[in-house]
Image (cartoon, rainbow over the protein chains, first blue to last red):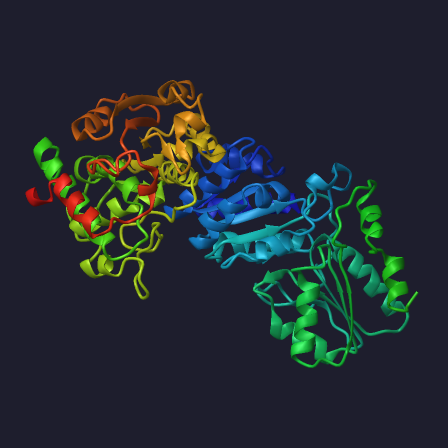
Length: 306
Length: 273
């Protein structure tokens, strides 16, 4: 995703001189080298100093620019939190805070490099919007939206590198603020977002192989959440499953439960999230997810479809 | 350049008037950082009346950002005087239906950024100055920080970065009144001083002046080399101009009672405004 992010940002920067990127000693690969070479004045590396990264981005926006602030998610959101809240949220500035390698994708780097609660943290800030694309193609759409259409503070939650393409045959295009059906069915609806969508797709494939008609939905826009779209999903499927690489609080799963209650949904609803626990074990991304109860086998067993 | 009003007596008269206006407001509400406003009165006055350029329509071409947001009463008083804020705005200060509070809010006339939490302003001023330079504008961003803000790590991130980016259109002032909520800065942090050397070592131009001497503040800015950011360390007195407020921490926040108000008016020479 970070490669398509940098390729898209470079294209946007070519078209719009207001596009800047402020990085904190971590730079996306790929086209960012071209960005830096061709527009050196619009590429600012603050070094290991995340508070001033956000402050500079705010200052740029206050003078009419459309800056991106970029580093590993925990350092772009948690370390400079008050700057994100006051400078960006309170002033409602069009700055995109990019959280790269969000969730627990940096599995072996340990809990200091995990963002298990970033959606809850960012989503609690008034004015803050949240986008979490599920694959490199959707990351392109999301990045372009941030650079060209967005007019307020945004937390763009992306993976790192090597994510598979999942949306090339999606039945719907990316539309900010709307659920995106990647495939449409009638029995089961799986809602997910971000890197863990790959697992959601595997679950969908398995259920289809057992004869179920399955919808697979990318909830790329987490704030503002498409409440009407979720209500429709809850009322037009017999079974809705939310798979989320995030803590149990403040993400899509609890909000889906709330919408189900508020709208008297009658479907079965299962949610799979990370636990409200730090992760002290190591191994692959999949190993860590499994330690919190999220894997193909564990989910299929839980929903009674092994 | 004709609007620059650097005459010493006229500057003093303006500052008396602003201190009087702040005292008047202090009788309307209890929430007022009067000591903090008085310590930077001459600094902010100098920025607006002596340093910031205007275009032919009277619009400021330069930017002023009040990083020590709790001192904003002096900014409000000046913005009222020059017609950017209205008397009604000031009458409604901190009241239901009003738009001015104890800290500056972005979106209000004349306010470049929301501040109040310490340690945010210098970074935003840096971003603003960088943007204007990158856009080819010949403008300057002026920023007033408190000495308390120099204890925030974020201020030093901005200090280092401003130098690295060679942002020479950033001019900052420390309102160095040596006070913070729980007492003297120099007692809390014995290594706080010298400040000038710290900024010089971080690659800034830096100079120390009497922060209540408009001419000295003006001269410090005008005599800079201009190839790097400038920090003017302004030695000031918290509550300057009113004997019982000077260097007394409680006047960071409280408003004077009627007797204190009358005495304060007399001491600042309100009758001479």
